[in-house]
Image (cartoon, rainbow, N blue to C red; front, side, top):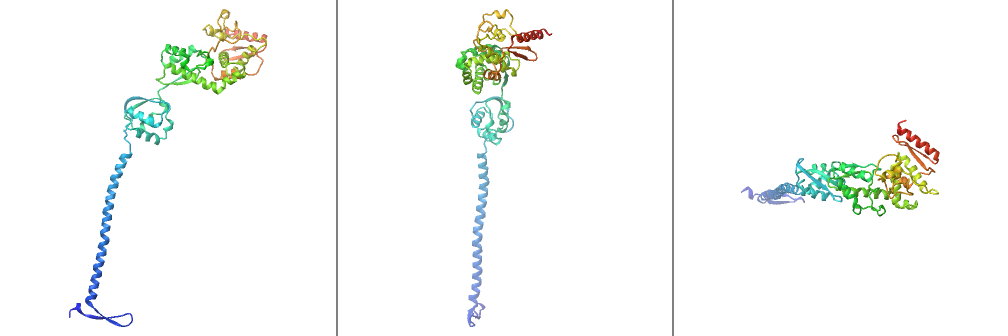
Length: 386
């Protein structure tokens, strides 16, 4: 009998027995083995597919990342660039506007590269109007460094308080290298300069003395306009119109007084007192003539501390020894201290003052005519070197 056909007894769970064929038993084991092999093969096939799929995604991800990186990274040059080009940043331009200007000028390869670089450096808000010397084909980061406000192409022009307009124009021509005639011509076009209506069409007194940043592209008219603009700012800050009205004066009269205060004061601390002398003389009962040497010298286009007897015979409208009241207008360009002194004079009854020591700026004030002559003698002695 074939072993495969042999029967054998198998005990049942209930204690009985049953006959079972080896053939059926053996076939079951082989069947189970085949099933296990089929299950194992069914598991491996999807796994292999997943591995292949993941491998494909990995390769695609790498190339996709490279593609995205190339798309997201803006075109940019490397290094400090070559040559030279002047770039102007105009007032009101945003960082994006500046970036486009740099691209158009060939400074950076792309506006986006500069926009990214200036944002990374945290300097978007620090870009200042002006002209800058740049180079062609610079890296965006290098371009950001050259747009430092401290590296702008400009000249600093400083004008002292108390300069006459004629001297102011000469200083501007000297310091900027621009022709004096152009400044003189621009000074006459008062409508273009934006002078206040109370200036009576004259720039004298309203070309505010300060330090100005002058760019190469600024014309003389632009510079003088900037000075007038600065005067407006100061006048608004000081409340010139309102305060002048409170004093019973026009703004033009206050500026005239301020110019005399500036010319006559030996130091800032004396300005309020000098202003008070002017008001005491103008408002006396009866009013006195101002008798200011500075106004006489201005009318004669002369310079000096004291007018001569011949000077006092002048028929100039600025001869305050001969004419009552204030002169027609300012005799110089006063600074803010003088303007404030004219608006807020120091309290006192002084009628005279004499700068007894011009070298040390010592000025003495008095309400006594006798003492005035003593101060005058002291001045003359100091002038002689005694």
